[in-house]
Image (cartoon, rainbow, N blue to C red; front, side, top):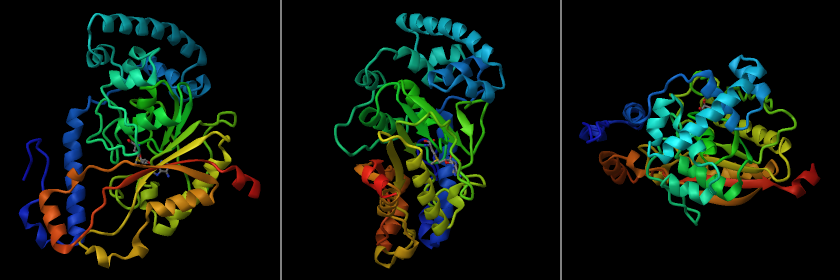
Length: 372
Ligand SMILES: C[S@@+](CC[C@H](N)C(=O)[O-])C[C@H]1O[C@@H](n2cnc3c(N)ncnc32)[C@H](O)[C@@H]1O
């Protein structure tokens, strides 16, 4: 059965399935819906070296890193700087004469966020929200119905760019450096382009053709290393790791989503400590995650808390590792992922699902440092 967008829906025979089968079905359903979602996104294409240099330079990536990543000479980067300035001037002119951003992105074979970063030059953050047609929330509930398909690639666990933009608005200023240690589809880097923040991004997966700004890097639990040069301390770490178990089937080997609960928690203890060590006193941490409860097909009263990891646990770990929590933001997931039949089944069994997702903001705890 499909909805009006050709998305797969659960069939009425759902109550015949076990909890595991429902989970597998839900995962297949998410995969199919993601494929349909991809059609809404611009086709992923390889960009020219000139455009790659433009993106990476505007994100503040040091020339030596760009040269290494693109396997080009540093002089070539300077050569492109001139050409890119000419391109940016053309973009400004064409925008004034009414050409749309998607049309310019297509014409110059450039990612839309790069075009936005040019168009929005000199604008304040508030003006940028307006131009992007995003409301600016003045409170701590950041619910967004859908991802914004202009920012980031289709990706399991892709987050709305508006969520990142709100974090940048409240907790950073223009030209600040953001670190995205597990960048996935690149929503954080894209939003940084649109909001004039520098950004260094890392992920397991290497996609140099389409995402040269995301450097391949493994946060190896056996040997945790720090990928930034020693002089570069981030102003904000935007940390959106794979949630426990939820996406296991989608990620490749090496992903922390394949870890057991003790491994997963030990990984966070070590990485939170490393991040604290590598931060400056003004660095902020933005950590996004959701409760994990093994709730599927189980009445809420019978859930086993030993299988759960609640946000409370991450908060405690952060504090143990020297981060003082300053804000908790509700960033709920859409309830649309529970189809009508699933909901009926959950009512019957008194099963309680999860839509609460939380962004924890923390800053280095100076007192904790003294204790070390
Ligand atoms: C939830 S996704 C990030 C989604 C991203 N914020 C977006 O909106 O597209 C988490 C990412 O962490 C990466 N990852 C998981 N384990 C990793 C590891 N040990 N080292 C580096 N990256 C890892 C995965 O490849 C995945 O892309």
